[in-house]
Structures are given as C-alpha cells and as structure tokens.
Length: 285
View 1: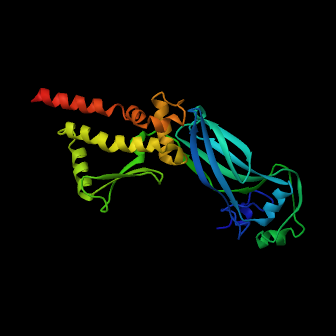
View 2 (view 1 turned 180 degrees about the vertical axis):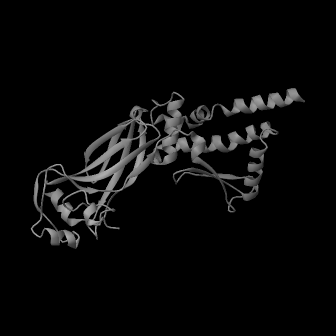
View 3 (view 1 turned 90 degrees about the vertical axis):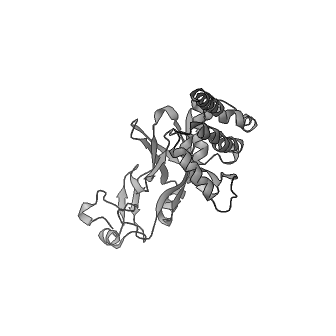
C-alpha cells in the first residue's frame, strides 16, 4: 500500500516497498551467504536487484551509489558501507552476536536537480513536473531488511534425520547439497532411532553406539567436502564448531585429510561416550 501523501517523510520520491513512489520498480538484496574466515571475521556475500532504469542511470553517471547498512542489535554494531551490485561485506566476529541485519540503500553522491521520472507515481509528477532538488547524501531507495542468523547453536542444529523409502533397512545415506546435513534412513529405522532417543536413559549403551555410526559419519563426510559447500549454513556451523575445539586455524586443505579425527573432536569423542556407557552397564549387571 502506498504511503498517504500527508504521511510522507521525504519531499521527493523514495523507492521502497512501503511508499509506492515507484509503482513498477523493485529494489532488494538477495543471495546472502555468511562465511566464517579464520575464526575472526564473518564475510557476507550478496547481490542487489534493482529494476529502476532511472536510478541505474544515476549510478552509471556517478550521481548515486549502492550502500548497505550492517547492524547487530545485540552489540549495537551499525556500519554503512558503499558496495557494488554483487559484493560482500566483512564484520569482525567479536563485533556481533546471534544475528546480523543487512539493509540495502541507494544514496545520492551529489546534489541532484530535476529529479523526476516516468517511473514515479503520478502524484509526484503532477506535484512537481519540473522535478525535485535532492541534496547530496540523500536516501533515494531503501530495500528489504535481511536477517542472517549467526548464533552458535551446535552442530546438531544443522543435522536432520530423514525417513526415506528409497533407502534400504539398515542402510543410511548422507546428503550435503542443501543448507542442512541430512541423514537418510529407511522409515522403519527412523522409528527405531526416535524410540531409542526417547528411551535414552534406559538404553544409554545402544544410543551411544548408534550416535557415532550416524552423526560421526555425517560430520566426517561433511568436513571432507567442506571446501565444496563453503557457503552453506551447515558449513558455517562446522567452522564455528572447529573454532570452539581450538581448530579454527587449521588449513582448509588439511581439513578433508583429517576429517574423521576432527569430526571426533567436534562430537566430543563419541567413542569415549560409548565406552563409558558400556562400562556403566557392566557394573550395574
């Protein structure tokens, strides 16, 4: 819905989803990918979509620029950075917590005269046919606000156990193509696994034995293919997990070679958990 005339805050047209000043145009930020680099920086890649030929022409002539506001409510971080249409921004990991917000904008880089276009809503063109005078550093467009989750919720938060009728009983398959690691098992096996989880206290040995065969295999395979899926959510979670284990500085070339060892560190030595559970069971008997 267009902003009512008497509610407008700027004396010239603003491209945004909530103004209606550019009825047939869109502006937004898409394709965000957050990557933890060297355990110290978060790189966020993105692309900007703009369908206003008028604003594109202003930027081509050096009269306006794309900028992105990066903010984190938890730490009060707020930066405004000049960017290109396909770009990335870098934020220190210590400067943010839990989430980042990115807001694309277009800002005038010099004073604009005769600011008017056929793209503008009729009321603007009727109000000032000769166009508007817009000061330097004025907002010309505001896009969608993109939220990027960066909380370290643990590796289990990006692993899904999926019932798949195409998988034979007793077999599991690992899928890494999406944002989450998926372990595919036969429907009957998934029911048994969920039952084992539910009654874990009564069957700790069984659960501790099952855990390495599924999760250790999945995490090890994910680490082995980490370099081929570096922009996924699960890859980001794995890097945080490596950092938490003191392995954040490990070369990306070494991770696939030692994926099984590093997976055991991430999962807190699951073999030890199995041995503890088995020993406790024997002592009880």
